[in-house]
Length: 122
Image (cartoon, rainbow, N blue to C red; front, side, top):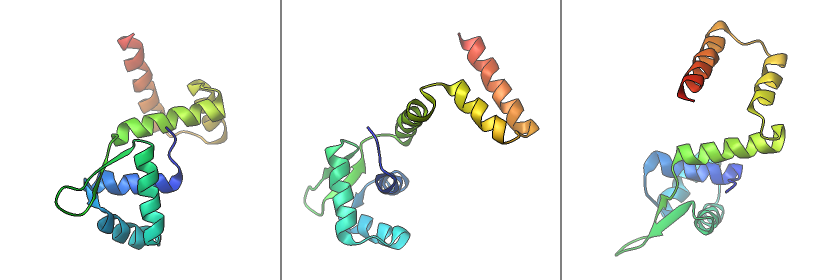
């Protein structure tokens, strides 16, 4: 599942706040993004059709909930990015980033520690 930038903003609101009524989502996203009511409600419906959002409307206003975890969505987005831009190669991405920008000693140490953990886990 691919989330657009706008859909990601809606999901962030749901992740940060738990469930939100349509009205609460409209108010939050109008303040944060300047969106109209129809834009927010359209995005919520689109996310429901993607099964990223679920809703309930028992004895009151419809409440929207995230149906996916932030970590799972981030992993899918990262994999999609890696596949599209670097043909699925993490080493190509890291190489590309480090060629153009020097890493700090701290970043190098973190990468080294991560690689050691991955190696020991296999």
